[in-house]
Length: 201
Image 1 (tube, one colour):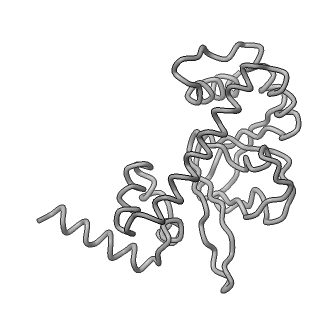
Image 2 (cartoon, one colour; image 1 turned 90 degrees about the vertical axis):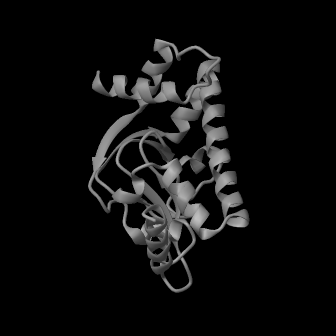
């Protein structure tokens, strides 16, 4: 029952304002195919080139996806905190992961297998609306992130990050945030120092 209440609350936040709640039948179908897991910090949830067999919903904690550059450095691609879906590329037809997924904190995640989830979506207009909403949110996030690299300074990207993810900058390692924002840890430290001094003058 606890899992059902948690997912019902989270899924409700993903629905458009002009639609009603998902029916009990839809929730029951999602719970039938889902499972909740708790993973320690530093757990690899999915390796590069592994097949996408499930998607996840972060109930508690933080997860990142990352790839290795030519020098072997881990570059953070995306960050996922509470209420965010992870590994959702499997819903878009990708068979294998293009990056690695790792927990940055102890994380509680609800997993749903890709194929049964898509079958449930096709069988339910309500879940189809939710599915479209998920895809739209994911696409908006990716477009916004791409735009920030093309049009904003490193300082503005950091300010936006703090605004869009309040408190996350205190929870994650500096190196992770820096690579996510496209800068070195040293540059991030300088930006933080400058902003701190500006606020205190």
